[in-house]
Each structure stands twice: as structure tokens, then as C-alpha cells.
Image 1 (cartoon, rainbow, N blue to C red):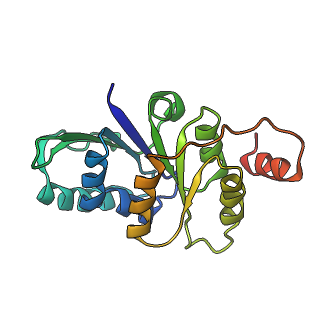
Image 2 (image 1 turned 180 degrees about the vertical axis):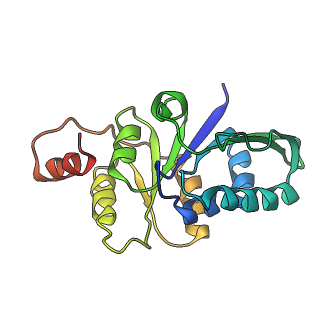
Length: 200
């Protein structure tokens, strides 16, 4: 069975830094090195997102041999297959959004890399996925930091902040970590806040 990683930025606003990190040729190379064969990038519905993806994929194509390229379809999806110098390949699928993201893409993934939206976090944790959350430091009212770190304190995910090198190193580290399962709601103030944020 092939290993898959899902990257999700949420339905609307594209988290540019997250997309730039995961579509960096160095990151693609690291995923191949770690044995991943599939990468799914859910990039959102913002108007600038497709141009961002096109520019980044152009850079990846200069580093790796694109043996397959479907081009963008009407729904804003593209599928490519890249091969490295050792003949190892990675299938990349970029999608705007899918209402069935959890069942189609989260469930079959070994690793999820997400923005810090509480709904996205809970979607992954409820089905026991390894999860890295990248904080969007550009947000002015950044309550996401407190929420993500509250989850990290429960040892159910890892929070990424800082530069690309730190993000890359954390991805390597998570491969060897064992996380706790998200505990059942116990009526604590933290749980109530988290669930209220997620509107569940």
C-alpha cells in the first residue's frame, strides 16, 4: 500500500506559506525519501490560488522529471507524477476543495499537514491521523496559536512555526513519533472552547 500525505488549507482562503512549503522541490524530494508515493494538496477557492500553484509546479518540474501532467481541468484540479534521479516517483494531485475531503483524502492518508482551523484539526484527529499544523502568523487575531498549542499539549499533533528548514525537520521527526488519540470530550473548559470554535 502506498503512503499518502494530505495538505489542506481550508475551503476558502489559501494559506500561501503552507502551499509554498509543501510544493518546494526540497520538500517534494524529502517526501520521496520518506517513502511517500502520493501527495494531495487542497488549496482553496481563492482567485490567486491557481496562479500560485502553477508557478510552484513550474519550479518543481525543473527539479524532477514530470512523467505525467494532466493540466488543470474545469474544476481547478491537476494531477502530475514526478520522478527523481533514483527512479522513485511521487503522484501529486492539487484540488480546490471537496465536500468529501475527509472520506476521500484524509482517511487514506498516513500524514495530514493542515492550517490551524479547528474544524480541519478535529477532522484529522477524530480518525487518528498523524497531524502537523502550520500556524498562519499573518492573521491579525491569531487565536489559532492557542488552540493548536492546546492540542499539542495533549500530544495529539505537532505545531509548526518558523521557517522552511524547521518545517522540513518536523516532517522528518513526525515519521518516528507516536501520538495519543484525541480524548473523548470531558466537559473541560478547553474542550468546550475547542468545540465551540469548531461549531460542532
